[in-house]
Length: 125
Image 1: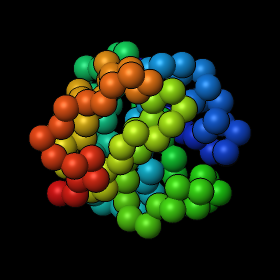
Image 2: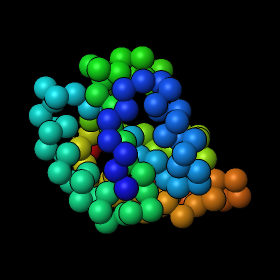
Image 3: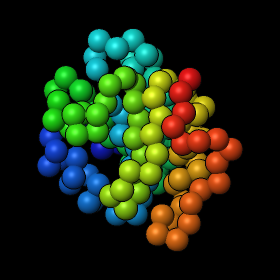
């Protein structure tokens, strides 16, 4: 499920609140970023493939306060949240690695279990 552009801290918090126990994937990007543009259609496909996952986008140029809170220093940068808590992140445009994290986290109850991952959650391509 795609929720679109997040432009403020309030909108970000509202998205996490309204998502309940669903996994939330936030794409931090900029219009001028080539890798961000190339991964965008892949994210749209993932949103269709995983309708039980909430996808949002933060343009770091337009929502600087949100980007600063999460110390985004490289894009594309994806952060995953569950029950309003950050559970993982990944930098770069590696679709397979992002998909692996989504599959690992989407059905996890973060209050009682952790996902089984082959590698660390801070992945780079």
